[in-house]
Length: 538
Image (tube, rainbow, N blue to C red; front, side):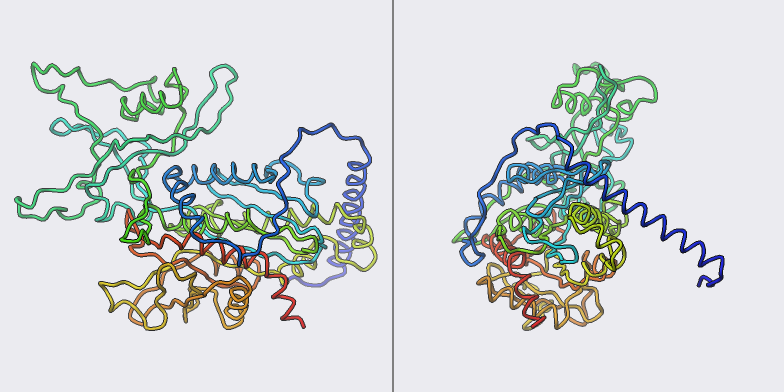
């Protein structure tokens, strides 16, 4: 604890004076921006204002778009690229973290920003927004269990097989990865040979190139051996019989690129393949990459009445997709005074500890920069700063967070038909019914009695059915981004999940209506939170 001495008080007074000067300069800069003629900007798409209510949405209308999204965007980088494209078409403007946001955010505007190309936040400012008003937020994650190429992915050939060095991300390379048709995709860091500038490019192959073969049961040690992920689960990607004397097969390819170059540590045929996909002629211009294996089988509906969806990476490109579609379908009410926001993070499956994870400052700093820009754009900045108001600072941000609500969104476990001993009566949600409010007595989830009542009211206004999920006392709970975000910002929160079977399998199952039911609920929350919050103030 700091001691309150005369020197401390003098220094504090000096700092307050400097802060006042900085605020006044910020206000003058904002006025200068608006009074100075600005260069003409290219025309932006002007979407038609959305007036539809959540009750009017048909869940079945979202099944096909979800299947297409899942098939076409296998990696976290592709998912962010997909969301960016959808947002831009809907009139959202990208704000880059390195740029100043002053003068760029205003009530009625729609914006998004990204971090690391693997996390994204998008938000729409209500037309009647005033500083201190809250946010209706949905947060989740878009990373999924996968196997990533090692920095040196070249492996010595064994018995004519070309193999690939990979490492499991989170709980990947489990038993469900055996004998699957695996393709490869991700991002590649490329240098422009003419300008010397570097950029990131997305790549994915449209056919399977890898497989992790099981052992025939005849050998008596089990089809998966000892499940050693380092020695027994190395993917095969091709053949090389050049070591056989007199073989007609071409001699083994030598490493590409110069000595100590990145591509010299990768399988030559893979380098050539990736380069051809990106139309790169000089392999040395590939500086690095983050590539991963993924199940290449398309997402599809199944079941007698096509009531299921079978797909890879459902955890969690299900809740995340539904939340983003909800934001794009959210109402544009003239009297809306809140900010509607969706944040999707990377690295949830490994603890969220990186800067693009939910434990980083991505969401709080985005909110704070948004509020800062909105305050600077109002004519009341001077009064707020110097005539008893708070201006931008702990007071205003504290008020903003106190008026906000967070829906932490992640898939949850559906009732299992073959392992009924894992189901908890009254707390195991079903497919194609609705989202589940997730509760955990040990606070692995954020949901409490207040937040459950709030979201049940949202469901009532939106024509949705809320289920309940809770694990048995003899089971282990998973975690979500909810507790870390709620505690960091001090916002009210609840955990909501769309049910699925086979969580963390390379292919999982959900209901064919569940993506649309998720969109319906999340849209209802974004549209109705302000009304429901007002009922608690009455």
